[in-house]
Image (tube, rainbow over all chains, first blue to last red; front, side, top):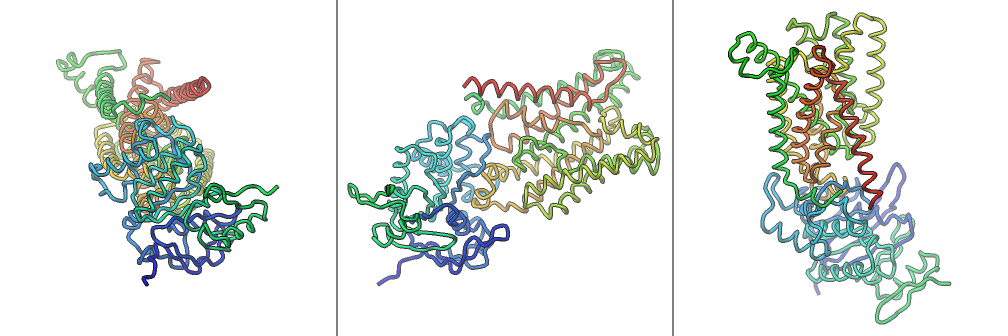
Length: 257
Length: 337
C-alpha cells in the first residue's frame, strides 16, 4: 500500500508572538488533495498556526511543503505552490479589482514582464468563479465588505497553487456565496489541490474532509469530519455548549440550550 | 468615488500633465518682475534673452523638477507606509536638512541665497547631507525597516530632536536666523542650470527605480503578509525604496528649501483623477508635483509683483486648501450615498 502524499507537515512547532509562546509544540501533517478545516475557540492559535504553515512567521522547526523545506525554498517557487488568504488584512482601496487579482499571478511572472494571455485567462476564471467579473473595472473602495472578500478570494485562487491556506475566507459572505465557496473548494480538491482553512462556523467546517481541533495553542484532535470522535472533540473544546447533529446527510452544529 | 475613475487612461493623464508642465515652464520663463513679455521680444534683445535663458528658464525648469521629486517621494512614502498622510519628510529628512543648513550657516556665516557659488554649493551640500543622515538615523533608531510603526515613530522623534537642535543653534547665533528663515520657507529664486541638471538627473534615476520596484507597492497594498506570501523580497525592496525616498527628498530640499504640501497633495490629486497601479501613481504624482510647483512659483512671482513671495508659503496655502476641499468633498459624497 502506498503511503498518502503529504502536502504540508510540521514537527514540534513552537511560535512566540511578542515574547509569549502561542503555539506549544504542534505535530501535524496534511494529506495532499484533501480539505482540512481548523476549528477552536477564540485565542486557540488557529490563525497563528495557519500563518506559521505559510512561512510568514519566524519558526525554529522545519516545515515541509511536499518534499521541500519551506523556509529554504526559493521565494518565488514557494509562492507558486502555496497561496495564502489572510483575515482582516488592511487592504488599501486604490487598486482596481482586475489589478488586485492579477497580483495573484505575480509568482508566475517575470519581474518586469507584462501579464501573458494565460495570466489574463486565469484571472478571468478566478473572478468568474467568485462572481466578481462584473466589477473588474471598479476600485476596491467601491465594493462592500463581502464583495471585497470575494475579490480577495479570487486573488488567492489566481495563484493556482497546489496548497491553499485561507483564514476565515467566508466571514463576510452571504449564504449563497458561502455555498459557492464550498463548491469551489470541492472543485479545487477534486483537482488535487490541498485546502486548509480556519473557519469559525462549525457547521461549515464540518463539510471538510478532515478537521483539526485546537485549544490553547495545542492540537487536541485531528480526524475525519464524519468521525464521531471528532464531533465529541469539537463539542468538548466549545464547553459542550454546542451539539453536532446529522441532518439531511450533513453534519450541523446547533446551540445546546 | 465614481465608476469612471478606473476607466480613465493614466497614459492620457500623463500626457496632459506633461503638457501642463511644458506650458508652465514656457509661461514661467516669459513672466518677469516687469510683467509678462513674450519669448519673441526676448529673442531680439540680448539682455532680455540673457534674463530668460540664465534666470527665468532654469528657475522654472528647476521648480518643476523639485516639485516632481517631491511628488514622487510623496507617492512613494504613501505607498510604502500605506498611510495617506505620509509625506516625503516623514523620516526626518526635513529637520535633518534644516540642521545641516543651520550648522553650515553658523560655521561659515552668510546668506543661503548668496550669489557666490561656493557658499551656495556648501549650503546645498549641507542640506543634502543633513537630510540623508537624518533618514539614516531614523533607520538606526527603528532598528531596520521591518516595522512600519517603529519607522514612523523614529521619524517623528528624529524630527523633533533635530528641530530642537536647530532652535538651539538659532538661539545661540541669532545672525543665522534670517538665512534659516529663507531656507525653511522654500524658494525657487536662485536655481541655476547646474541645480536643474542635478535635479533632473536624480529625478530620472528615481523614476526608473520606482517604476521598476512599484510592483512591490501593489503587492503591499494587500497587506504585508499577503505581499510576503506572493514571494516579494520585501525587506530588500523596502531598503531600496527608502533610499530612493531619501535621495529624492534630499535633492529637492537641498535646492529649494523646505517646500511643504507638494509631496502630500500631489499623490492625492492623482488618485482623485484616476485609480490605477502604483507605477502609474508614482509617475503621475511626479508630474503632478511638477505642475503644482510651477503654479505655486508663478503665483509667488505674480501676486505681489514686483515683490516676490517664498514659494513654500504658496504651496502650503494651495496644497492645504485643496486637501481640505478634497476631504469635504469625499465626506459629502459618502454622506449622499
